[in-house]
Amino acid sequence: MKKDMNHFLSNFLNIGEAAKASGVNAKLIRHYESIGVVPKVNRTDSGYRLYSKNDIHLLTFVRRARNLGFSMKEIKRLISLWRNRSRTSAEVKAMAKSHISALDQKIKELEEMRDTLLHLTKNCHGDNRPECPILENLAHE
Amino acid sequence: MKKDMNHFLSNFLNIGEAAKASGVNAKLIRHYESIGVVPKVNRTDSGYRLYSKNDIHLLTFVRRARNLGFSMKEIKRLISLWRNRSRTSAEVKAMAKSHISALDQKIKELEEMRDTLLHLTKNCHGDNRPECPILENLAHE
DNA sequence: TATTGACCTTCCAATGATAGGAAGGAGCAA
DNA sequence: TTGCTCCTTCCTATCATTGGAAGGTCAATA
Image 1 (cartoon, helix red, strand yellow):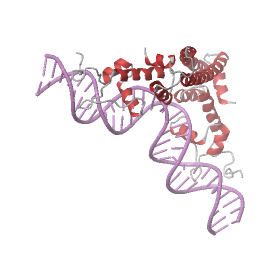
Image 2 (tube, each protein chain N blue to C red):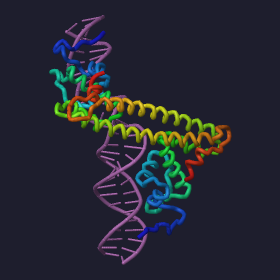
Image 3 (tube, protein in one colour):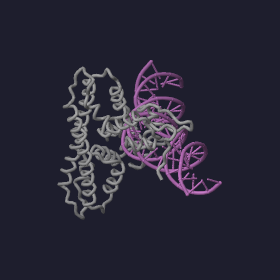
Image 4 (cartoon, chains in turn orange, green, blue, brown):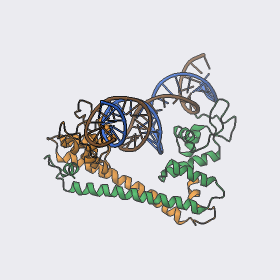
């Protein structure tokens, strides 16, 4: 049942296999290519994309950076640092720290929202009556 | 300097004044109207939108719900509860609680991201050398 | 060999919430 | 009337992702 298209160049994977190997789905891989996050790869005569082990590493890198909440723009920057032999770890650390700050800020905002809602729900009877401090608070300053 | 278009119907505000009064900018008010979050309002003969005090309350309601992180879909639902005399506070409270859970979940995810990054940055020298555990971790599982 | 079915290709559109601009009309003051 | 600000609609962009349509390719099976 399993398809094996690698007879022609056995060190390469097609996009479906690359998707499985990297954890980034095929649609998204094409998208990342189109916005220049990952480079264009070689193709077969019939136009199928071919992915090497390095390409898979790069896709995995992207997925993991996304999982850490980095934006595509930040990921482009991380990739260029990753591939730049003359980078300094200070550059990377600075990006990470700045991202940590952004995450902290977002966490704080969400906590404030949650605490406000918690406060409102505590004052709401939650019964069959229509009186509801949650709605009242939303309607009036 | 201040424009006063209300000579014709002095209890109504045009969209710019409604924006100031509600804290929702004019562009966004039109957008909310177009997606059905707020109803279409009456117009002057020349097509200018006219907002009543009730309309301003509604816009304020929307802004405050957004500030609490509710989605537009949820806000539509909240508005229908708000305007429904036979609503029960239990319905509203249930929505609020469910939203609190969603916020908690999001907070948890962000905290995990942050903690992972904190851990990585602690192990990164952050000096002039290229060796960087942050990048290494991203590249390899 | 012909067909099937799973894969690949490109292109175009939608999501959700908001922002931006262009082109043209309306209101009002000097 | 000029000039300015505001209003109108419509179209576009953002961000990351998902979806579908239409059509080509691969490998295996009838």
